[in-house]
Amino acid sequence: RVLVYDLDGRYLREIGGPNDILRPSGVAANPDGQRIYVVETGGVQSQNHTLYVYDAQSGKRLKTIGKRGAEAGEFNIPLQAAVAKDGTVYVVDSGNFRVQSFDSNGKFLTSFGSIGKKSGQFSRPKGIAVDGNGHVYVIDTGFGNFQIFNSEGKLLLFVGERSEKPGPGNFMLPAGIDVDQDGRVYVVDQFFRKVDVFRPADLKPDLGYTVQVKK
Image (cartoon, rainbow, N blue to C red; front, side, top):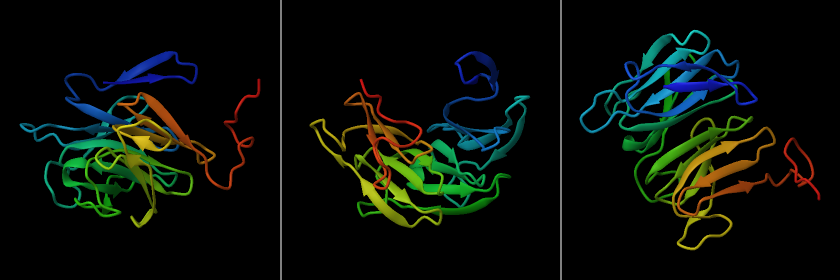
């Protein structure tokens, strides 16, 4: 199920349930909060490798996007999703080593990435986020970094490296990523039990919505 809370953390309602969703692993909302996208990961013996679309208020399932497979619009162990300001939905299709995008109605748009060791390829893609400019951030647990793509799937930059020693930009098991309104990037590393925060080069440390509190 998906649990819904207000801004102060008060429980509001739930979406789905054990008879509706089997192995949920990711959730995202569209910009106006009217639709919820739930990633159904499936498994080796399951054919439910899909993306469910729900009405955020009523909890009614509106659509099922994709099925198990390797063709355009199909999934193999999808993990997480993110929604851009224009409503484009991006899904980490981990077993196919790619990211796929769909419009708000579930129509397949494009995909990028492949298995490999080169920049722009993936080893173990997992987390995903989209910033206000439409750039797509993808965590790769195998590489120990995150890669930044434009909306067309062109690689712009990669940040971080796999390391057995903790430190800024050193990751062992990066798993989740998000971007705030100022463009700061937050990366969760499960092994080192930390969150690394990266600031855009053109944003001063004392500016923006989230600033360092002086004591």
